[in-house]
Image (cartoon, rainbow, N blue to C red; front, side, top):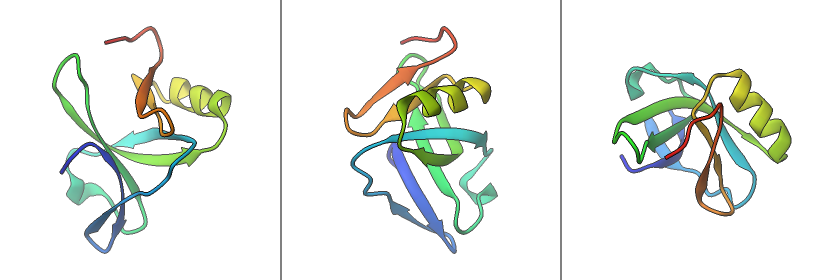
Length: 94
């Protein structure tokens, strides 16, 4: 599965077509099988380490809210959809 955010519909993962806002991971999964139908699952490969993360994600319209949620959840980064890039948090960087 490629990097991106997918909606789990009964085990079928459908790529999100969001064009604005931010994806924020709130809870990580060990495997995709740990997600439930209706979950948005973010798949992200850290460019610095090459490690792939699977997370339950939420879409947030406001950057400040997204940064606060991500920071409070201890995330490395949030995803800026419009600019197709990470926004690094908590002192992390590439």
